[in-house]
Amino acid sequence: MHRVSRRQFTLGLVAASALAASGGLAVRLRPGERAIVIGGGPAGAEAALALRAASPGARILLVERDPGRLADGAHDPAAAAFVRPRAEAGLAALKAAGIQVVLDDVVDIDWSAARLALFSNRQLAFDRLLLAPGTAPRDESIPGLDAMARHVWPAAWGSPREARRLAAQLAALPDRGHVVLRLPADVSHPQAAVARAAALAHHLAANRPDARLTVIDASATDDLARAFAQTAAPQGLRWLTAAQGGVVQAIDAPRGLIETAAGRLKADVVNFVPPLWAGAIARTAGLADDSGWCPCDDRGRSSLRDGALVLGDARKAALRTVGGALCSARIAAKGTATA
Image: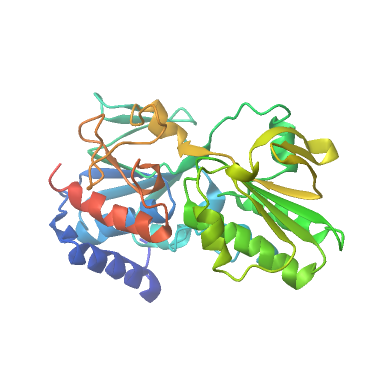
């Protein structure tokens, strides 16, 4: 039997208290009933802890495909500025709270049989299912943009490995080097996009003050540029909005070339952020519409499939921040009581 530390017990109480504040302690899974949470990000971990605190007799299981996402321990300090927030509760804390954790990938959902198919060929039965599938890169038809280019020009958007690669490239940047941040037209996480631009600008100001930063912003408005300006942008910054030609037309990653409507750019380091949509399992399971996102009501109940609860960034109208993800977990957990 796992022993729950004071910190782990506190995590459960915090989650339960958050549910209470939103009326979520109405959640009462029957003893022995199995609730499965797909996704171990902030929303998924919060939902699992909340369900465990509210229904101690139920069986709570969390499925996460990336072991690094729940790993305990600090990230590489050099890459910390380029790593999106992860779940506060790590693997050990979830297990000690009595939550079974399966490190695997969900590849399909049989709704009629109430079963999940995993990449390992295992199947898991569920009584209640909550999905926090997160987001995934969306393909773009840009000449030159292939798997090699995406490796050389990391997005570092939810991937600690890519964040470390970006940090290493910045460490090797020449004193008068040129860094380019590319933001797509459909910016799913506006606050994170502005924060990324600020992180790059601050890094260069502290480590390469003679280097240049160009932001290629293909969004239809100048909202991101104006939000960034409030961060007291340093000298050496050029922000190209779509109206100013900030749209990528072609790339040559080996040569560090980017063709835009405003002309050709030569870069030493490129942080190429792709457009996103809901994670693969949400689309495979029929929870996403033509936009690639999951339409839901304000409690996370899917508009496309009865009984499905979606939380976190995959929801179509989500506030894609950590706070928004946590709030969705509490509301969706509450919804399991009345679904």
